[in-house]
Every structure is written in C-alpha cells, then in structure tokens.
Image 1: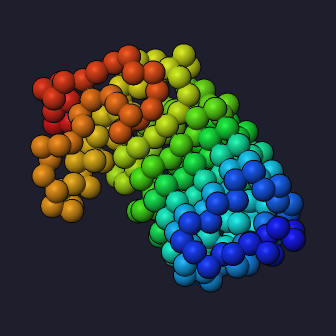
Image 2 (image 1 turned 45 degrees about the vertical axis):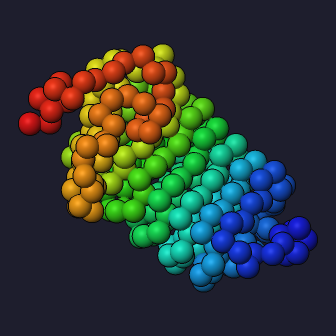
Image 3 (image 1 turned 30 degrees about the vertical axis):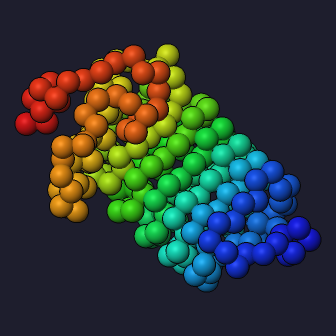
Length: 220
C-alpha cells in the first residue's frame, strides 16, 4: 500500500510491473484512476490482482476516458474478474490495447468478453496467450467478430493445437475485414494491408498463409 501511495502518477506511462499490490492498493489506485487525465499506459503485470481488485479497477474504467493501454498479464484474473472488466469495456471509450495474457480465463470468460465488446468501438488489440481457452471459446470469438464487432483487428492467443485450420482461417478473415473497414473509415490506402497470417494481425503458429485472391473471394 505504501509503495502505491508514494508512487508518482503524474505521468503518461505508469509501470507497476511486479509490484505486489494488495486489494487496498488496487482500491487506492482505482480511485486515483477514476478521474485521472494524464495516464495513457498502465502496466499492472504480475501484481497479484484478485477478483476483488479487478472489480475496483473495472469500476474506475467506467469513468476514465484517457487510458489507452492496459496490461493485466500474469495475474489471477478468472472468469468472474473478466466479467467485471467486460462490463467496464461496454462504456469505456479510450482503451485500445488490452493484455490479459497468462491468467485464469476459460471459454466462459472469453464468451462474455466478446459479447460485451459488441458495444465497444475503440479496443482493437487483445492479448490472451496462455489461458484455458478451447475451440469452443474461439468459435464464440468468431461468431462475435462475424456479426457484431468491426473494431478488433489484432488477437494473440495460444498455439493452434486446440483449433482447426478452418476456425483459424475464419478468424483471420474477420480480423482482416475489420482492418479494411477501419482503413476505409479513416481514408487510408489499402495497398499496405496485410492479407495473410502474420504477427501484425494474429499471433499463433505461423503455419497457414492466404493469398489476396482467396481472401477477396471469401469476403464477397
């Protein structure tokens, strides 16, 4: 708690990596974050955030419209915690990058997250490597990308051993559709758009590539 109280939060990049913050510390930070207009990037990786802590933080995110990058990797966030976070993302309009890598998220948490992201128009990158997500969870991701969300363009997740080639293929196609929509919306030329599997669109084992002709056929 004293570490948090003595930390200088009057800057854009707040790095609390490996600070062992208890729930009271997160509560203090969340109160500060609620009305903060300075912090753009918040790194809470390996800070032992519990479900109670993520609930405090999620409440603050409903009011904060400045934070762009939130790193919550290597904590103990479970499906209940991701539910609180998802509810805040329904109203938050500033976070663009979310890292929940190496937590305790299952198919249920992912399904809830992507259902609520139907209402979010700013988040474009989600990293959830090293979580307990099966093919069922990624089918839910695909469904929500296909029918509801046109903002997310980048996803990082575990290796392809859980997922069929067709499923991976379809997720990549939906991400690339979102890239095209976003580039058109912002009047950006499409010539540099990556239309194949690489680290700029989705991070898994790079074992499949898609040529432009096949991609365009699929999105007609």
